[in-house]
Image 1 (tube, rainbow over the protein chains, first blue to last red):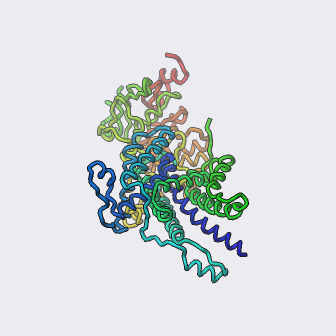
Image 2 (cartoon, each protein chain N blue to C red):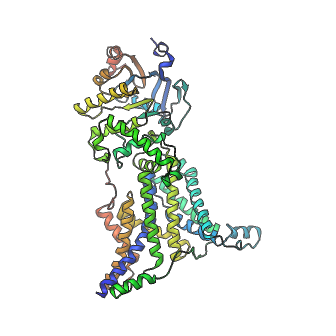
Image 3 (tube, rainbow over the protein chains, first blue to last red):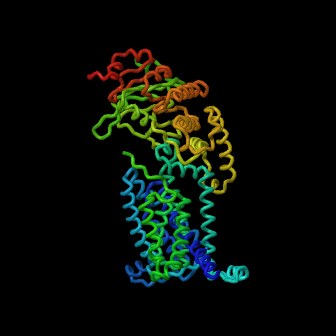
Length: 327
Length: 264
């Protein structure tokens, strides 16, 4: 009984990590569906959003290292902390500006190019953004605290202790993240199903020519899609950043999104969510049950092995469109 | 007789003047001129690869010709982006059905109303005021077209699940939802069985007569065209070889040669 409850607790924790994976994967799916671009920079966008938020909130002067080195000054921060709300708003605006610039400077010039060329362009964007973020806000590890509840939830521990005689350890950050992610997904779904722009987004995802013929501007839709992806990146950045600090390694969470995408399919929003949850729960449970037999630390590779198996037997993923090769 | 001079300018919806379209060194259209009059069904025919689809894509704004002018509603049309042409109320269907497969029939047809919906992103996010009113108003118009095309029963069905003939009809519906001044149909009968062809013919005639919509269509099947069209323009090797009433065109030696493949 004790073991079963423990397994349940592990799964629940995995479930919540899975939601965070799903959040990053969602950013990939949104852009891929609308424009057929695999956005390699999604992970770096998560990092960049988190960096900008921390930088603004802590009153770091943008490019202060660069300015100090060039001008011989020794600026170190504005000396104030920006209110969290204002910092969030400004970060959001930065992500929207980024979306607009990406369309203006990159996508616009690569219309009708081979997908692999667009993919390469996003690799370039990833490296640029990574360096730019460091240059702007400094490369040191930063602590992100915008008042998201953290620490083990006493309420959940007490309640589960009363019911089962066994207290569950669940981080309040994970609970908050799950709720926010759920709201985000519900919001996006409603928006895409019931609004004019949502309909246009789905239209562009289905057929570019037909979308043009009914008067939808592809470029406007791309800006909107990249903006939504920027918003998703910001939310993922807030939770991952609060969890593990803001620094370069944050962009590597995107690597975990890849097996999620393999599992769920690159073209399916429900796929990204289910994939994220399966990987999250799967890796925790696997580590719990099989880990001790093979020396532990299975979390590092479990997701990739699952992805590999999927690539062999169902390359389009659980929910992806069937790959049809026209001859 | 030169058609352009013969017809009253006021009756001309679109005037295509000496249009030349090149892809690199290949001439897809050379010096093609004809007009489309208000309220008529105008057919563009020709053998495979003659340049019919290119012509439609020029009218629709997907291709920009290197030379020539397009006059629409008495005004010289400036160079526009493809999606802007839709705002001039020129709607079209495609040879290989281009519906939004993941969406329902209703949603597909609502995209046809896109050009009339002006609510901002924020108002849509809140589903408030203008955005909500707009959805309701446009939905009413779409429902009328659904009735007109007799597809009430499938309005909530994802179009990917419909048989070919019905998909073609939905595509026509999406174009009609835009209440077009000019409706372009790219081989509306292609790949259909006889029954579906008859249905489609009837709908095209109904659209023309009951809604008064001007139609320009490309068709491969000569028989169908002769029954349907008011006037026919024939294109071969990117050049106009005949233009006139179906009967005149049918007996034109150039046309007979082109269809039988006599070398020039």
